[in-house]
Length: 390
Picture 1 (spheres, rainbow, N blue to C red):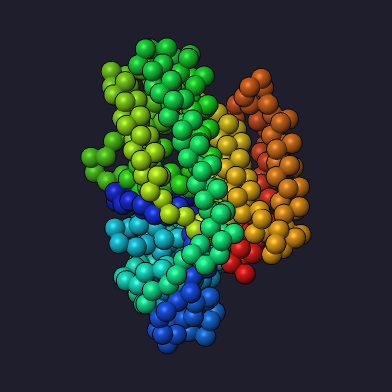
Picture 2: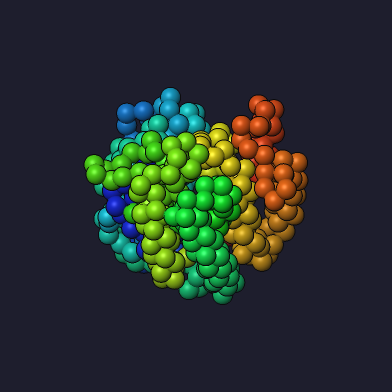
């Protein structure tokens, strides 16, 4: 999601969902007259239209039955925008980001439980957004409860995420230990390596809104009063710009405590197939908005390590869904393979030893090539959610 608009700045926690465009495939038990059908959005079965302007967020329906809800978000303003559906406590049910002026993007979200929710447009991708109440009626059965193959996909992906966290903790501990020992060069070498595991599972990590800004927030992110700049990027600044500070060790200890907390919370996650599909797309959005621009690792310039990890995370989510994709659309899988390989081949041209060139060593032509490759991959990735819910 957009760094400057993290809902975690309001200390929300999403204990059962990725912070992705989220979920699909439910069968609703609610009466259709309450706002939509199980496979659509507004009454009549079509998507709920959202007119996202610079100063207004007009949602064509204020309610829908539980199940699969689809929003068609059109940016009619002049600023890049985002659209969210929030549950209680700003729990992210689904999001779609990086919607440029004149573009329309879909958000497919599974909401199995009726209740009070909120829609939000975020022009400029900042702040709490232009919000409105949204009611969901009835209850619905999750898609994984109805489809064994989809259940296997989500279980496989969770095992992969768990393995990444199991590697993330000891490598991050090595990084923190180097910081606490005053080993600046050692810590610098470990910084992009420890972040690799985080970046691979970033949509999962971002779903815990209170942890994400503490662990991965940037210095200019919006924060509630009294919330300090901590985590990876605070230590990055200490190592590359300011020098280690008296509290650098304490910042490292807090990073480790938060990492262990992340591991505990992930164990309780319940995932849905479209969360995987939309998570794969969100990771590419992260590349486009943060890594290709050099904004993510602005002090160390190790953005290409993160780029590679985001792509690997996207590929991991797609791999879990591959049996379903191949069954429902035999042409999509080979195209995804081709586009992933093109991105991997391009990144290899920037490899230096076990790592990559620094962002400051790239030319405008280099970043253009990367952007083109990511855009080409993003197009078939964006089809995956629709295929798995077909």
